[in-house]
Image (tube, rainbow, N blue to C red):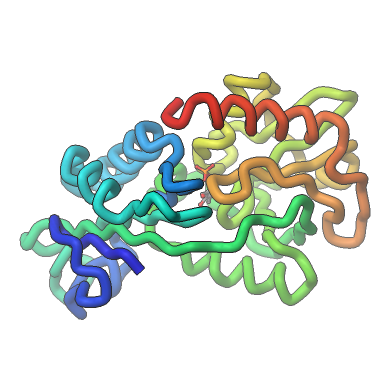
Length: 270
Ligand SMILES: Cc1ncc(COP(=O)(O)O)c(C=O)c1O
């Protein structure tokens, strides 16, 4: 595995302090970037969101130029399909919720991964996305709720868990945004639902169009089509939501997937 840590390419020699605030409290932010055929996709948008998340969490704004050179260092031309992860934490700190003064930790790592399956199943979970949380909309490393929910979905045969928010509206998955089709119209929850501003979600709204509105969770079971979007999935049709089967990929899902594939191949850093 290629690992760049605080300015140096260290690979398996990379180590982080046991007092790192990212480890002890989840005080950090991250990005996942897709690397396909040796080329990282949408780096500019991911770095913009990394900066927004860091500043939103009260961390110093990351050194974007340093991170860009870290990305260059870990990406290899032979990489077929890989996840590149940037993790940026509060750094060495006291064993409490107080942040230390050592400065942040920046870690960039890549890992080859399986390509996603064409369609998948989702499972709604009995927990909520808190759209009023202090970290709503920030891509923080505090992902334990997502880890728990994803395991719940996998135990029930799904590949992704779906959260409603505190007022019963559809929000998102543990690592994906959600789109539904109603009367032939593409709909996705607003960012006020507590959903992350996914890079893939944003590109689909720009390249294909669609309506952002509140979707009561019950309406998930009336959708004509459903698909998930994320950095490693792109557009993934959903063939089952809990016990309800639906056609996948549906007509509109297939159109969106085609447009996304064409546009993203033509514009690697849109
Ligand atoms: C909670 C959450 N929602 C949505 C997404 C999708 O965002 P993106 O399309 O930028 O990968 C992610 C990230 O991967 C996520 O972690």
